Length: 587
Ligand code: DMJ
Image (cartoon, rainbow, N blue to C red):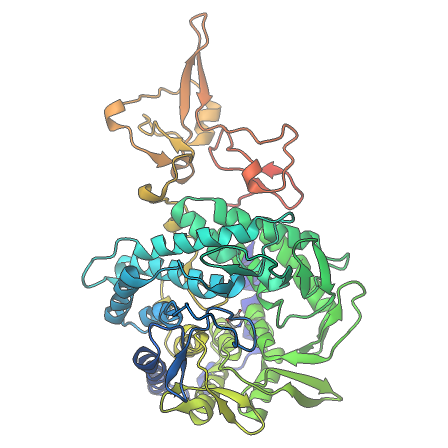
């Protein structure tokens, strides 16, 4: 179905967009731009490594550092704990970019350093959402890249250390989800868990954009707890939508009540929509698509006004604020179909030189109300996606504008500095880690997408690539298979039967050779193991060895953990949005 939709989009786009051959963007120009972006990346990276590493982020004006993973998400990073000395956040965020730039030597050096030195046993209160997208996502993605034979690591000494670190971090996240609603706390102390009197206020993105990273962690480790926790939170959040299929921006995770009923597609909500769509692509679950589809239609119906998206009250659908945020610039990339919205953002970028964080649209006049620009990637991201979808060289020209502005206004000797005020271009002493994880990455990929040739990736909201439909989702490395997992003990089946075959012919001969017995996951093998039972009367019964019944006889459920394993396909059943266990996974 997705292929069909994609084809329709492509056809539409061919009609809408002009002839690519009319541009000045020939291959020499593309190469020149790629090299310009490469220089930007290394200017930022090397300054971080010299002046800030192993702390979290670079302060490019004072050439010092900030340990900002702690308290990241609070606008003013003023209560940084004394005993926390950083977790090399910017290095973790740079890992996948290094691979995309083809620098496997530096990638390997970084992986080895992190393997030997990184610890999450630190007294730091972190924002779950931020830590998930930046650190967990960075590690999981880098682990996949490190085990991909095409990125051959020179010393060949990678032994899943990044996955071990990711799993350690994932375990530290779990107490945040141990709540009456299943909605997670927004903040957690990495060493001590949820702090006493912790705030119960959180955001829609905070609860609804954890599934890619935590799902990937579960698939890689074979430990379902991470995916279950993220999915339970997402389901609960979705159940809180209004009859118009709209959600608010902030909520109380303990009571499950909305705090801020007004919402849009920007700050506090953005990645929720993004993750519904991307989770569908990554995990193939139709549920995600259905949720995304209803949510998307509601956004188009209640928030959209021409090319702009304002905010509206989730209960009435009535417009609330005509304010626009720079974070919204990711939306055209998510749509990758309509370029009108993208053109408006480009217009704003050109008007100010960069995108102001928030601005009001009043009688078609733009008034910035929050004047800073922290080197955000969203416009570059959308530009990259739209170029990929259309191959219209106009997007490369936009990319060139972005690169030139970044070099003119934000480049300083010690790296790239955020802009404090877009009306004066006064700089700010902070280089966010997403500048290396996303801004530079998307600009580089715009001019050189060789990393993507013959590969199929989804980029997380922080720009970390996760492969789609690849073996890693099914293959659970033996060392990571938890002992209570459902195994097929007998896998030497002659002939190896498909589940459907077994249904048709129960008398299939099954030979078990104890010496050759090997542990493996039934789900990954997609075979239907069976046990021969002696039913007496000389009768031989064949029963599935993998069958695990659902927790309730009426098959109702609140989470996947209450669903068993299907007896005929040996596939784990999952809990649908309607709350029933079944084989909802679409192959
Ligand atoms: C990034 O951390 C992610 O893109 C997130 O989804 C939104 N904000 C920043 C970049 O602006």
